[in-house]
Image (cartoon, rainbow, N blue to C red; front, side, top):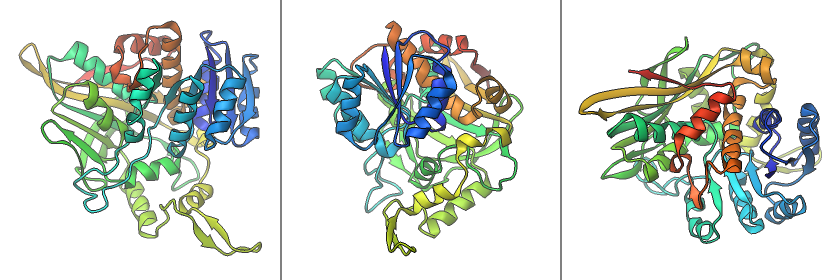
Length: 404
């Protein structure tokens, strides 16, 4: 297997550090718009299988040419969701397998944003599923931790733990703190704003997908391994769009433990228009320039990849499932916890980016071995869960299950 990894930020760099310990691939080309980042990611692993390149992720033709030049048979997308579609199309053009960790962007319904779906997450990719299937090619979408591992948990619950599923609810929480910062998101602020301020999507059998207001339906969820109770709210996320396509459930939700202060900060950014992606004109010493307010916010905040030394605590990603087994009610929480102290000591990557990065590497290894295969545009829940969970444990990062 020869892999083109596009994006050498926090998650991309963590991917190289995890993959360097595994023998399943022959080469990994690390490409980024900033060649210094790609070079640094490659230098850190000191492995002859890795090489660095510069590429603009938005330039479909350039990405396809890079895939062909290096004879890469897989494109792994570690960029933010703005670049999903050009990378997705470049992989198809070059005849490469495609993996990502976030899906094509949504657009709210123009008249009824808090009730009716507009363009849903992943709609642009699923619209091209026929092309991939006809070519016998695989696009594995949403293969991070959430979405990704959370979807694998949903598949595992359906196959091995339940006869009937009433509700699947992804629940994400942490007790992470960052020394020296009152507001320092542990993941890309661009992506965080996108998923938190867009109308959240809920799925119900018989009704299908519908939207609610941001931060709706607050609940307190008790997270394992010492994290404890965290208030979680509805957030737009890919699992709600993926799980119902392959797993039968009466209801599917995604709730994120953001915290009241974090929510109020996001609301303020929205109130001031600082969440907008459309460029605005700003005067400067060199004359008027056009900049995206959201990019300005991102530039003013610390790079999440650099926060590991200042960060303390654990992050938990998991899937809560309620239903029936052998005629009796059952409720479980399948989860994966990463301690920042462990991920920094073992890999030099902070917990949130490491937890995201390990899952696409596991998926790549399953594809390389043939344990995972298929054609079309598939989510993680379209493939068998047990091989993935067994291999994740082999990577030294076991998952857990708690009866509720």
